[in-house]
Length: 130
Image 1 (tube, rainbow, N blue to C red):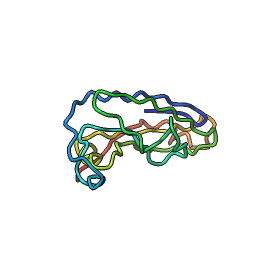
Image 2: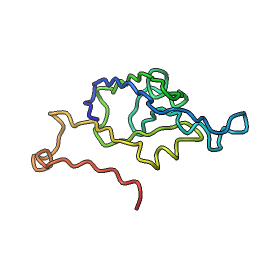
Image 3: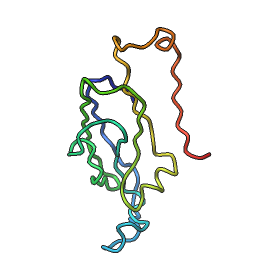
């Protein structure tokens, strides 16, 4: 995913998974549960943690959906950032199975980089296991 400083990003997360729901009850908060419930959480960008932004407490149930809207300040630093599911009890399972990705805030055209760097080909890679 790419965005520029000052840009907006709208995503609709559609959870095509089905139940089971795993352990339930108040003691299950940090135990394995809700294996097919998901959401999105973004690391790095300076964006709102309030809904419909980066609210990591949203739970997208199986066969449900949620719309996210992010605004990136026009002075936001360019760089590589990442997103992943963040539901307690299932996030580590989903991340370990590859449900992650990158968000790249591109350099503005007038960003002071040497031409040699600007003209380099971009390669995006995500390493999860080493």
